[in-house]
Amino acid sequence: MKKIRRSIARCKICDDIIESKYTHDYVTCKCGAIYLDGGKEYQRYGWWPEKVEGKNKREDIIDFSLSEYEEE
Image (cartoon, rainbow, N blue to C red; front, side):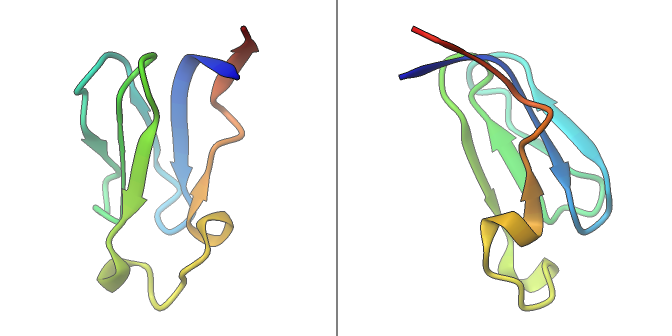
């Protein structure tokens, strides 16, 4: 299981980068299409369908390549 070191996501709609730094730290991108929550405790994410122009695959909406994980 992976332990979260940094929970960071890039919105592929507006290109904004967001980071949830602590538990219950709910953040959204500048266009409001995606959200991220949980900091290092858990990684909850999602998007608002009406703001992503019919895209429904995570890979088309959110980029997690900036997040950092470590193996437990």
